[in-house]
View 1 (cartoon, one colour):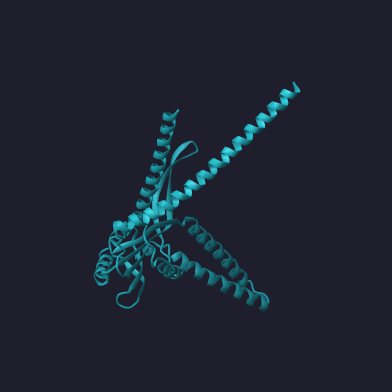
View 2 (cartoon, one colour):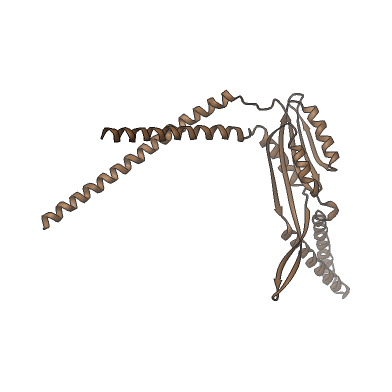
Length: 292
């Protein structure tokens, strides 16, 4: 009996120690993979403001094999999409990194669409909105990710094919309406009706001009992908091993104790529930014996 109890005790202690080690290792790994988010929110606000006034689109043409009328067919697809990368970096060698950045942008044939320089020496910040040809997007993104110490980075891609088709459909509809109104104007009529037709035609012309600007962003000669890049001057975030161990140990102890308390209450609740069920079964058994 004592040997069985000792085995169970050793087994329970082993699992408790294993749980502690798993939590500790998890926190250490998390500390190495998580990027600090200092100054990132300010960069995001800047890019949100300028991207509302400037968009870049690209296209990709490919074929899809399908079946039409029980016969194989090939469909040509012209996809329109928006691809945006965001790279936030930090460096204590601001001037040197900026020179590398300028050379890389020129080498890839990219263009700077927006630029903002701010801050005094030691606290400078450079933020760029870069337009790059789709085929050079990945190459430039990889190069910029090697500048300074990366604080955060991501790539997003959105399909814009339906929006492009809707703009074209709206343009065709407005052209037909304008043609009809011009024909009505040639038939003559009252002066008021003529003025109303002129105003309506003018309104449609303005809408067509707006659509022309929007559709112009999709033209092949204007095809670009976007890279939002920010370079912040400052000491790179370098966290020592002992500090990581200290933080991980503190978090592990706190989380471990919370889990133990939760498990204790769950075990107590289950024990009480089983005890109540056992009492009920005993009570039912006594009533049954009395009836018999």
